[in-house]
Length: 300
Image 1 (cartoon, rainbow, N blue to C red):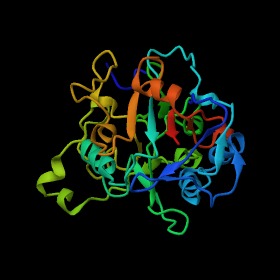
Image 2: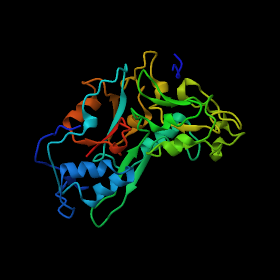
Image 3: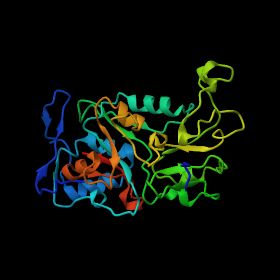
Image 4: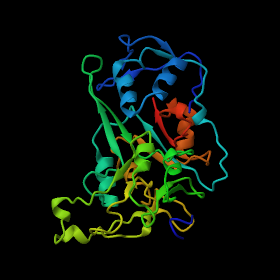
């Protein structure tokens, strides 16, 4: 099949959120500003990735008391898709090792300046005793603004699983989609190389398995000059569009996460790990007010 065929529960009123220190000691966050759950979720949702980390580091979470409002994004959504793949990332478990970044680059053989997943760091020593980290892949939005601005329809959302892709043979490199993405999740391939992948070096002929196409980067040929992005490692799907954690056919970032912070699965399946986490934990999505409906959730 061609690649281009085409939260929380804890809706328990009065649940106090607290953060744990490096030693596991509960920090009540008394230094943070007092706010109710609704205010807290609104504040997070209005911010980008760095903003989320900043709020967490400021102790704002520790002072918050969660009310009864459940993030709409965590509700079951009927999409008509066969699968609705997404990620749930636990901000309390990410240790900032960046193994996910290294695994992603290795799996997808991406060049300098192209990183499908990044780890945002926030240092605030006065308010918290350790840095805070947050992994940020493409959010594979249900309503992606990036696809709407493409003048040649090179980027689109797959009907069968909701993964947002780029057809390298159609992309003209205008980069409108990079401007339209509110999460900074797209990158332009300027044709740069690492020393080990320079033409003539042994690794120069190493193909990328992206989209199951196994392209070797060459000057003047796609994907050089194209926009590139996370694909949830969709080349690891079987012919039916399924991943298998047991067989190792799983997004490289989630498979490699040392802190077990990155969870991946089918949000349409109520028994999947991601669906269970969203039912049992408090989660938010970034920039909800834009109506993009990202399929990446952050556990608080």
